[in-house]
Length: 219
Image 1 (cartoon, rainbow, N blue to C red):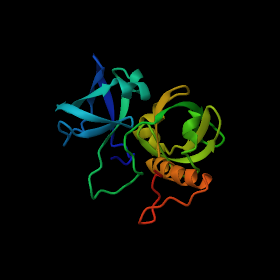
Image 2 (cartoon, helix red, strand yellow; image 1 turned 45 degrees about the vertical axis):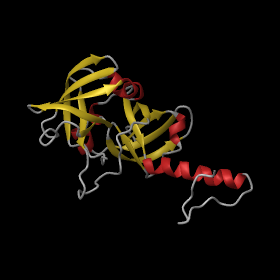
Image 3 (cartoon, rainbow, N blue to C red; image 1 turned 90 degrees about the vertical axis):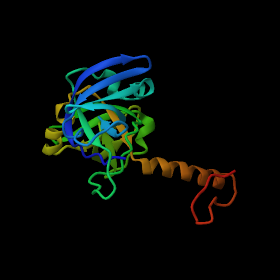
Image 4 (cartoon, helix red, strand yellow; image 1 turned 45 degrees about the horizontal axis):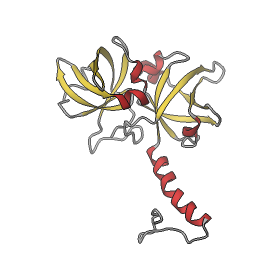
């Protein structure tokens, strides 16, 4: 579990092809201070498992499914990446609840000089998870949605403060760049739960609730 507050900008040192994916070697002196084999580190918002650590760098294996669903399929040596260690219990939740499970990718449209808003195109099927003033994760960065426009592709806008531009890859992105998107996991769970409720109501049956009043799936 992560918060979407980037700890440092790391550097991809090498990309090694594997039979079912790739092995990345990443320089990250901050996140490797206490990292060990099996720990989780978010790389551009993708939760990956540490294989080895040595001298301020670590390696992770990225399977083909992750490459297919994220922008890591385009990653190359020398690129900068956002890094965040998994959240420890008792720490402040500075961003929002982030799983590191990428839902898809979006494409940077650009920044409107008049409003200062940065906008992205994203697949239409993800747009309904976004709400004005809600949270979204872009390349592992917790951000607040300013505007959502439905369509195919859909579009959303965010306001980037100077600190975010300076300390993350978002200040280095250009129009046309692909970024990883994770929508709010609470919205996804709510959709799943409410679907059973709506299905029962449309069929003319009673509301489907559990003993504690929570909605459960009709059987």
